Picture 1 (cartoon, rainbow, N blue to C red):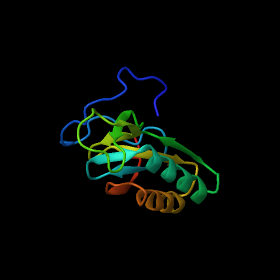
Picture 2: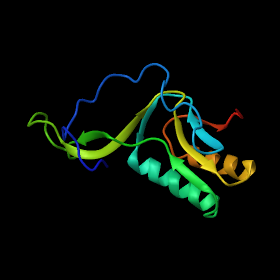
Picture 3: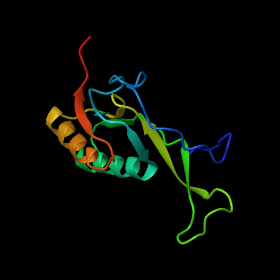
Picture 4: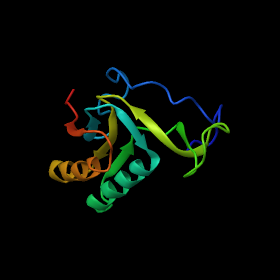
Length: 136
C-alpha cells in the first residue's frame, strides 16, 4: 500500500480502455512479463507473483516490479444493508492496460526466466505473455 495518499477513498472509475503508453518496454532486465488484456491487479497478486519468481529463480539473478498498487478499493461488510455511506478501504490495486510490463528479470537463462514468468502469470487476473528485450 502507498505510504501516503491525498485522498483515502477514491472513485472506482470506468472501464480500463486503450493501450498502455508508458512502461511498455523492457527497460531494466533482459526478460519481462507483459499484459495482453486490461484489468486490475491486487497487491496480494503482485506479492504472490514476486514470491513465485524468487522461488523459481532460486534467489539467483535480479528482478524488478514495474507496477505499484496505488488505487484504494473499498468494501462493505457481509450482510450490511444498503446506504450508510461508502465502505472502508479493503485493499489496493494497480490498474493496468494491455502492453504494460509487470515484472522484469535478469541474470538467469531464458529458459529459467520463461518458466518464472509462466508461473507468475498464473497469479494475475489478466492475460500475460513473456517478452525479451530487443538488442539496440
